[in-house]
Length: 291
Picture 1 (cartoon, one colour):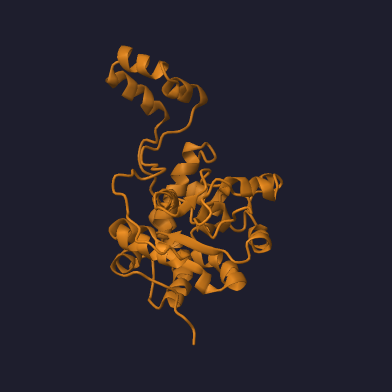
Picture 2: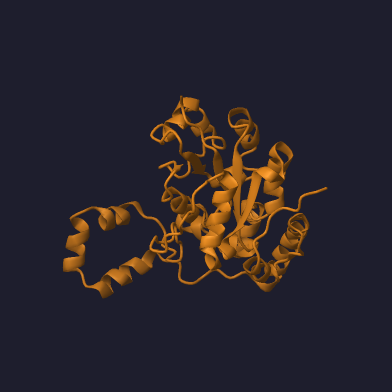
């Protein structure tokens, strides 16, 4: 009998979902897909590969293991509008974990990622107008509402990036309790954070070949002084962290405060851009159960 995932980490992009994926994969009795982001239910080109292709990512899972995958494309409305219907068709009993962070911080991190991938070339203040997905993917209530309507809030666990940084063991235990894991998990502090984009290096096919090819890498380190390598590397580096103008920051804060007000009401607290980090770090939050 083919294994299917019991749970999915559905996003959000640039919120340490890769780190959570790797931490869960280290726990005995939990199997995470080796391909971290199958994007099966969101991307048409992946969905066309068929259900058996998707199941192949879980065929090596132990019989009694809890299985999961992590695809941030599953909370990228309106880019991938068919995601919910596809998941409902194939995984009607799944549980979902949604990781959030300060919406403006997340937007800036996504901008940096898209810049390094050569998707975006312009300044961030221009990009927020030309690439509305930068804003959409930080509107957490908008992304979550279809999951609530389809599966109910009790099948979606809210996790926050800032809280996971300050209370990693506690948050890992909360995730494991939610997915039905009956052992005590252990956060591995030796595991490096995944997909860190702080270096802000733009991709280059020929440079990446020279840097990553075994043999060439060692030869380069032997023959070329580090100061020269650092200078060359700077050709592709983002020179400074992108900064929003005060006007654009205020516009974004107004937009996100509206979304956070709804999110906060569902969590039983008042949330805004200004108080987000303090509130999130100080308490673990679950949806308010309506009576």
